Amino acid sequence: MLKMGIPQGAVRQALQKEGKDPNIIDMDPEKPIRKQGNKPNKSQKVAAKQIAPKVARKRLFWNTIDESKLKENTFWSQAQEQTSLQLVGLDVDNEEFASLFTSPVNKSPAPKKETAPDVKKPSTKQKIQLIDSRRRMNGSILLTKFKVDYKVLAKQVDSMEYVKAEGNELRGMMQLLPTKDEALALRSYLPPIDAPQSEIDDAVVKLGECEQYMAVMLDVPDAKDKFQCMVFRAEFEQHTESIRNGTKLLIEACDSVRNSERFRKVLVYALKLGNALNTGGTSEEVKAITLDSLLKLAEAKAFDRQTSVLHYLVSIIQKNDEDVLKLSEDFVTVKAAERVVVDMLNQQLREMKNGIKLVKKTALKFTPNPTCPMDEAPDTLEDDLLELSQMGKFSLSAEAKIKSLSNEFDNAKSNFSDLLDFFGEDNAMSPEAFFSTINSFVSMFNQTRDELRRKEEAKARRKRIEEAKAKNLAAKRSKQ
Image 1 (spheres, helix red, strand yellow):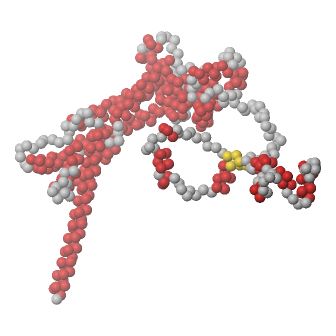
Image 2 (cartoon, rainbow, N blue to C red):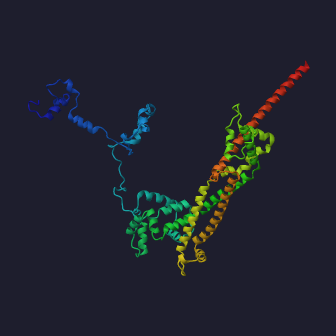
Image 3 (cartoon, rainbow, N blue to C red):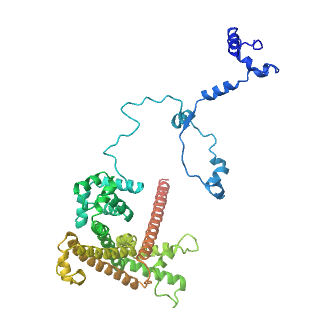
């Protein structure tokens, strides 16, 4: 039909009417039909490509590591080599995975509501952002927790009034004070200072939460110094209590060790036993030992390789002076004093002294003095001026407490130094090391004491059983 000039479309229709495949006209007449019958033509391929569903996948935008930089001992190298890390046979629900992380893109989109236009309407709630996004986010979280009117807070900071907030909260707000660049950006956005207040307020309201706080704080002079004073005040009682408790504990522990008659007897027993072991009673006996020598008593063993020198010492004390076995009752405070770090207390006290100087200086700087400059003001006038403000009054009270606390701390250090001299220890020895040594020995002493008691109780129990058996045996024999 094609050779007769009949159009190709008419030929296809004729073949379809006769129930034959119209695609036969696209085949090569020179080749066998079998090799061409199942082969799709180009139009079929294009149709198949168009029909194949496309799938959108969720992607994970992670940071990869260059394989050339990986060393042999890294985890990632082991994950490639060790079979235990290959996760072979991992149970995964493919249907669940596909439903969660894939989506066909040829689905007809859900009809959009007419009330939700594509273009966002301009809203009065949209905020102007001028600072770094991360800093803005962190600042907004803090300011949301600390609910306060920023203008009221600015007045409180300016006058350094007491604010009901924790030190960490105040420190966080201090860190949110605008930097030079942020202040410049805010100044450029806000109306000039001489503009009407209503115009300035309208501009501030359009800012984000964090920017609003910064804009209000721009007008507070020396805001950072004033915040530091407020932080110092908020944390003052906590720091003083920490130093006072540590100081008190140190003094009590020194008194407990120095005044313990039981501990003195233990030292004497240990000295005598050590001399008997080392010299055999000759005239070459030592007169004193360091406290850490007590720890060696548990290490030295008798020839039976079971009994330590400490076992023998405790047994001697038990036979001669059983009250000394209650040694730990004298050292209740000593156990707690081991956790007192004197260097840390000293640093806290030094920071408090420096902090109160800043508080006084800042309070005086913003206290009006019509008579003379602050640099020339005598101490009495300085105290009178400090009485005129809340922060000034606090500084006077806090300074007196710090002086008293410093005297107590110096007294505690002096007591400990005398204690070292009392036992002939090195003056460079720290309180932590000193009390740790004593606590370690007392713990071993109590453990050995309890162990010996258990052995004696077991021995007495066996003796009672043997006596009972002997008594029963004698009774049987008497009956016979």
